[in-house]
Image 1 (tube, rainbow, N blue to C red):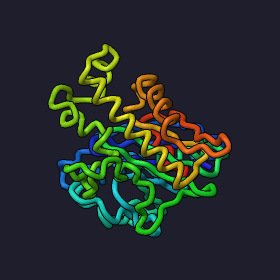
Image 2: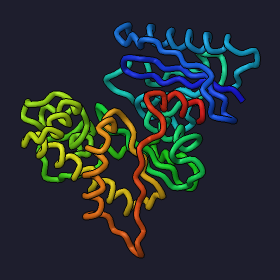
Image 3: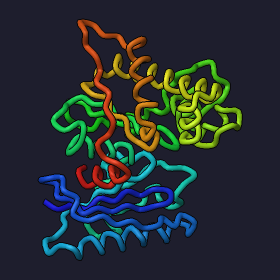
Length: 291
């Protein structure tokens, strides 16, 4: 079956035409979001993307998946809550707008669905995923199903606390959240203004710069504490880590393994496998189509 997946981001709209039987991406399309146009710009861009993708095949498209930031409604037909961004997104009826069923889900949940169907979590039943980028998102696969929880809030691992005594509160009012500990958005604050991006921070860490080393390893230590906590709570077969920060490669995964050896509870030798995500920037669109 062929489906369309859309990933609505703050700057770009990604669309894919996906064969859900094989996982083959038949076509990709990238369009600016135009968020400054008070809603009309990105809504129209999504409609045009869907139209363009439909023209590429002769068979009808029965379903469309749409990934977006925010919390979806219980029936996954709209985004129920996304304050402060993408004006007009909350409550917008995509099925009515596009004239056919549209299944809407959180963008980090969509990334997990891509991994579960065709990536690093294929054929697994219990999985946790973290997306490390500007912020930190995530999702949980429980008994082979996406677990969205009450009010579709489940899996927001970026907003668990790794430093309860921190004075700074994150966007959800959590002190010392994982997102604040490792998200790209807080690099400048964590490094006293010395570095502006994770890329700059990791480059300096690789060169042995003391402040960068302290900041980066502190961030990874807190990430390990979060992962060990998730392992205690959910006991996943695999933890998948995706997002732009994974481009740090061994600078991320090697010290992370060291800290996991310190903190993870491993009864009878049980050890949580941590892997890098299979999919890249297109995971949201692929996962939306899979959903």
